[in-house]
Image: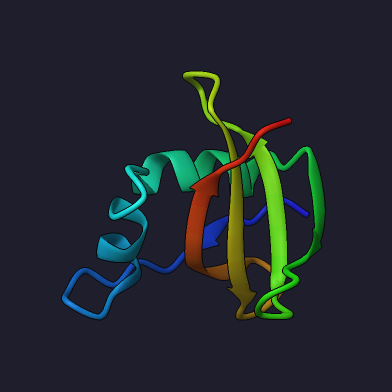
Length: 82
């Protein structure tokens, strides 16, 4: 499902810094969440996970928490091999 609203929290405990630790930007996460190629459930957290490409061609996994039908809170994101 493509997500239309993405919640970002910028601060020491926020998701902006967490994904930045993996060298990923909020724009890249949003690109995947708005146009996922596949989805599943994370083995480690049990949360939903979306897989997709960024505009630059990176293939990412994004673990997230759905808030409502159009809103999502990204937990983490990382590069994956196809």
